[in-house]
Image 1 (cartoon, rainbow, N blue to C red):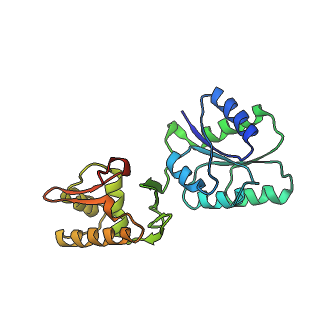
Image 2 (image 1 turned 90 degrees about the vertical axis):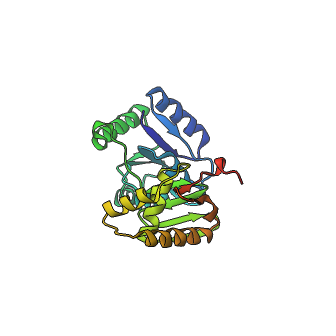
Image 3 (image 1 turned 45 degrees about the vertical axis):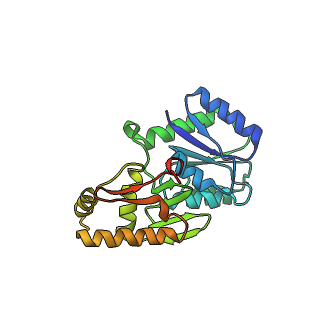
Length: 232
C-alpha cells in the first residue's frame, strides 16, 4: 500500500480527498501541527506528497524546499492559485505536477497513479535521509540532529555510529560490529578510536538533552534506547 502525505489545512477538503484516496487503497496521512511538517514527514516516510500552497505558518513552497533538501519523493501541488508564476515556481522547486482547484477527483487519481508508476519500479520504497528518534530529527545527509532544544552537527564518524545504533534501537550493537561496519565503509578506526568517537557523540548529544539515550553495556557494546522503553 502506497503512503500519501496530504499537507492541506482545509479540513473538509482534506477529509474528502482522504476518503477518495482510501477507496483506491492508498494510506493517507495528514498534518495536525503545521509547525512539525518535517517531523511528520520523517515519521511517515511517504511515497508521495500532496501540498497546498496557502498554509499556516509557512507556505507550500517552503515545505517543498525542505522536503527536496532531504528526499526525492514525488510532490504534487494542489492549489486554487492560478497565476503562471505559481506553477513555474512549483516546477523549479522540484514538484512533479501542479493541479488547480477546483479539480475532478478522477484527474487527481490519474496523476497520482501515473507518477507512482513512473517513480516506483517494482514498488521499491523511496529512500529518505531523515529519521526520528526520541523527539529528535536526525538528518544523515546534513550530519545533523535537531529537536526543541537546538541543533548539532556531527562528524562523519559520529553520524555513522549514530545511524548504526538508531537503526538497531533497543538492541545492543557490539563494538566489533560497529568497527566492522566502519571498516566496510572505509572508515578505519581502532578500538580506542571507537571509544573516543562514542564519547564525543554522547557529549554532543548531551547539548540537546539526548546523551542518556546512548548507553554503554560493559563487555557487550552500545545501545540506542527509544524513550518509551527507557526505565528512567
